[in-house]
Length: 118
Image (tube, rainbow, N blue to C red; front, top):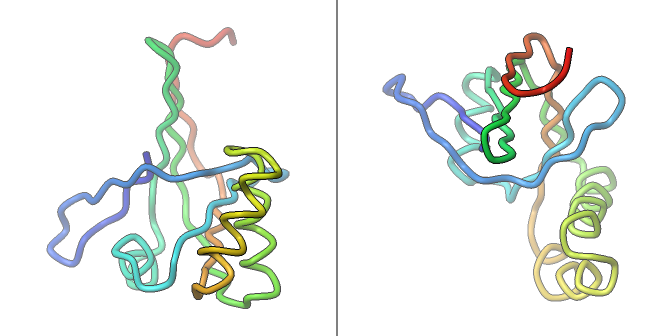
């Protein structure tokens, strides 16, 4: 779950595809969604990943990349990771290539976790 900050300072959470890319978390969304608007206004966020009773919460600031020559390959990468190559190609053709996408790159500034070996 990705948590961003609404204009009234309440939290907003979204399920989101992600991947670790070096020392950053790679995510992608459709331009104009609430998480995108929130991150344009306030680039702080957190990502919580759970596995039954184990979890990691990552906090940091983001860089948003609206350049489609970056954002489109990134959503293809994420779709392939989550749905496989064949389904990703269908999603690219039928949906993602028709949308303005934005890549979200989160710098990992803090890590909290439970249930993982040191």
